[in-house]
Length: 206
Image (cartoon, rainbow, N blue to C red; front, side):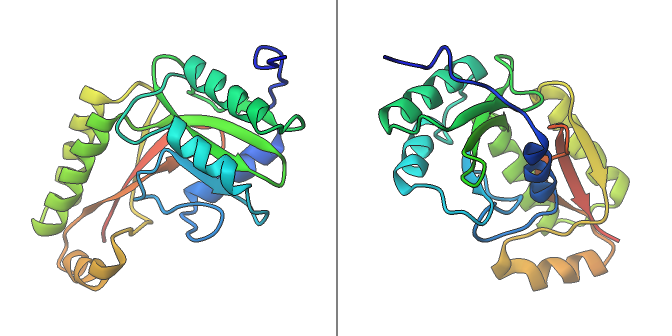
């Protein structure tokens, strides 16, 4: 029997840990960097089952926008099919049918959390802007205006722009970006979530 309509939801304290870890920009096993555009990722020291990761990656492709209702149904079907009867589905703040969602796996808590994700169109615009801000020199206020203009136009409400305190760039370009920032230029540093699931965007500089 399909348990998709009755599977228990839950958003407990572990979700707060997940969100804070993402905001901290930790990389490697567990979470992805803020510049990684993947819609499906994992968290924590316990490895997720590879077949679960693969199925979720296929269910939340980067080139599509999955609404929360469809995403919840897809995750429930995957968990049922793979016989993960003790796993739960959680809805993070802002994971609604008005926004795109992705999947965050916490194998230690046996939880898949649906979180706000960037639409393909917004992701593309921000990637273009990030490249422009790394190649051209814009002061803080101008960089903030450029990011805000895109978000006002293309993002669901409820996001926040954070200024300073974070430098993120492709590793092969980090030295170049740091020189760019030393010259007084500001860059788009990526996106993540606050503890309550609010989508955050950063610009970085000095």
